[in-house]
Image 1: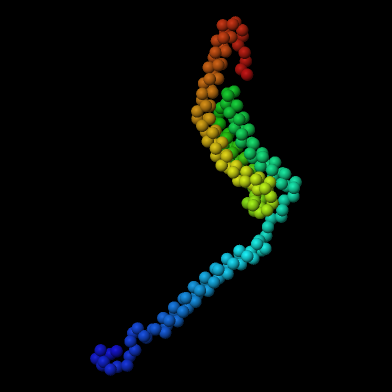
Image 2: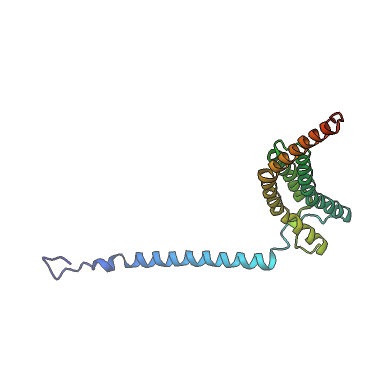
Length: 193
């Protein structure tokens, strides 16, 4: 409306863009509706029809499964054997770089083998897919092994920090004791074992 002429026929400002706003709202709501329908349709298709589209890894043969079991058993047993060997070495006097030797084994040798077995045996792809409890148990053990390795690592750190020094001191005390006893007995000193 013209303020000087109250009888002018100009449309009010609110109604001037009313049809544009309505078209914009309809377009916006329509786009949101289409997007929501697409999401729902994708979920329905994936839930009910998606299983056939996935490419499943070929099922391993019985020989493959036995080889995987052998490899997982090795991954399970080797940390205990290696820890015992390092601890035994410390008892006889070879306590040098126990931490570094353990880390070399665990981070490089063992971890690389763990990843190779994961790929070769396809535990990520085939576990809990119907190959049976034998495969699923093996996959579960493989999945739990890294947590076990963390416990071994902590055990070796404690051993290196606490027991290795005590063992060294005890071994030196025994060496000195033997030397004194041999001198007292009049026997020539023995060569170190």
